[in-house]
Image 1 (cartoon, helix red, strand yellow):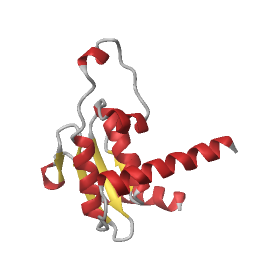
Image 2 (tube, helix red, strand yellow):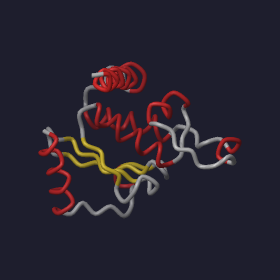
Image 3 (tube, helix red, strand yellow):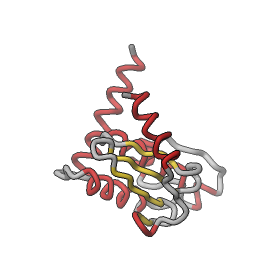
Image 4 (tube, helix red, strand yellow):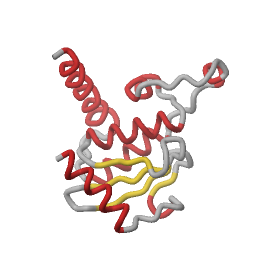
Length: 145
């Protein structure tokens, strides 16, 4: 029961970040996702004074609070916020790769982002959205639904 309360609390916090800080008033799914991308890709990298002490990954919510993170932390945070907005977000190869595939389920729209190189859409290279890839991502949505 405590874990459920903690999950609900985190959901409320993420919705507040999403709707009040990052994308207030934005209803269009692609514009909302673009706003999330702009915010997360604009975060600073982990300061050298911290990274010199070793690789300590932080939780996605702390990436938002501290406003910095490694590429993998930024990717996880972006994917979490996209999910909280009601869409699907999947790291392309790995979190460290930086590339993310986003699907807007209501319209079956597919978007590509590169958090590492701060690129979106057609500027993102190397992602082939084959039918096999799309069907795999759709299957996850069906399973969650």
